Length: 139
Image (cartoon, rainbow, N blue to C red; front, side):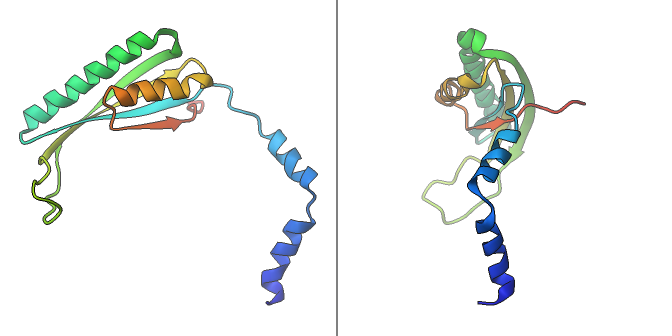
């Protein structure tokens, strides 16, 4: 093994574990609780039906958020519209519906302890995916 490859390994081993712990303690946790980006999708053979299915899922998610009460501080909705899916041949007997409509909800939580409960409830309400995001920076 050459010295160039061995030098970073030796340098990493030479740093005491206490120094690694000090670095970890120096990074403070975020001041604001996290947010969730929730993607809601509806697909169908025609664009208007895809939009209708996505709106139904949006209403279900809105009802879940209303029932969660104080766990959620704020909800913002963005409609991404209806798009045509690319045609993929040979992946099964039935092709997927050609149109999909999407909404994105940004759910700001009241505390970091609510992430699991809120994301589970939204997944059960029909969310296609739920992403945990950090607080937004100052603008």
